[in-house]
Length: 567
Image (cartoon, rainbow, N blue to C red):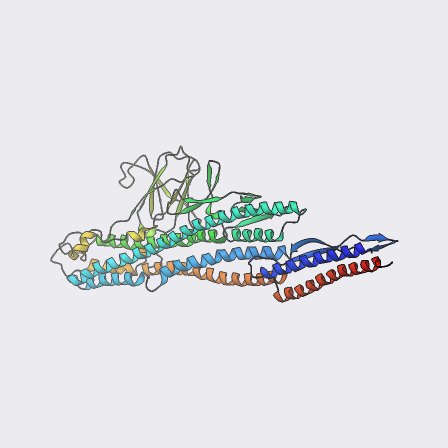
């Protein structure tokens, strides 16, 4: 090797050791940064020089700086972390619904029990004004408790809807950031002959992980290092340096709810909730559709079952004036007109109107009506196909008098369909949702306890007859008011128990998932994490290499000086 060769080898060693020192320092500086992968310098020997039939080494080249990365472990960790984000949200939200229904302070059962106990007291002492006043007082307290529970469910629902909007906003922000990082990754790959900057790849993966924590996503990595991310049912969210944001719009059928939308040009598509199954958004949709909607429907079912059964029995009795009883609670049997779905054909004039005809047969479920061009297909929210009794309108039929309508009866409901339907038309019906908030005592009876129809006799002289009050009190122990399988208390306990099981399941699953994530993080850190002791040792080693290479240059200079000093 010539003096120039020694110098070149020394310079290459200085450059290599300096790069290693800088990389080790970079590792130490980013040791606590989430998503950072340890970086190492890849060195290769320079091409040797042929001298007199043999090769002499020529120093070292820095090939690249790359991150220590195991794609299999990182993919497992990404998937597990996305599941944890889903379960964290699911546990939190179902826990709120469970607490609303099962806490001692919020439970309906004590107020329901007090109301029926007051009716029993009137049955025992039908002329007692204080006893009658207690029925009114306890009835109002029970109605207030139903309304309070409904308000709490509505509050949780608003929080869920706000959470969906916030999560969609975060998702779009991450998508835009990823598109920009993709552009930088592509540029760095061009600048370095296909080897993108390790730090940019870390930023890319961190954003991919954040997106996966919000919604079920699939990721494809291109040869240039950019990431293509598709979400939900395969919609491209990020492709190269382009992001296609999604939206959270009001559901045209139920304005209190948000639906996920994708807009291309002037066309907006409503994504099915079932297509979004992961991340925080998927959890919020699941809580809304499976837990909140179930609780809302079942609570309304119990409320209308109580008021309907009491009203029917109260109207069979007579008040202290010998007059037949009116409804004790305001009527809630008219469930109004359903708004057509945004999926309905613009030429459709179909209208759906419903009423509760037998509260004891209500299921508390929701129903979807879909027109196939010939008939309406009805499915319940638990996945069943419902076979209704179909009756054309007849002016001679007082319950179905309109000949322009067709009446569908099923599970305690009578649905009147009118207008002209077009294939593909859809309606959503939630017959008992929100009814718990509408339980109100008859204002006339609330002002005058004499109007409580406690007697089974119309004779005002039969003041000691409390038979009808007893019949109303017996409703509490009867299974007839709510489907024939459970008493009212058992129906509410079943509701609270079902939600409690969902909350407990989410908590158990989340605990197991958290343990799995910790295990995978340990594996990932063992491969890609920063060991500060190791990096400190590397600093010393690279420092010595730097100093040794410096001495090579100094040595080459002294040797050259010695030769030049020869006379």
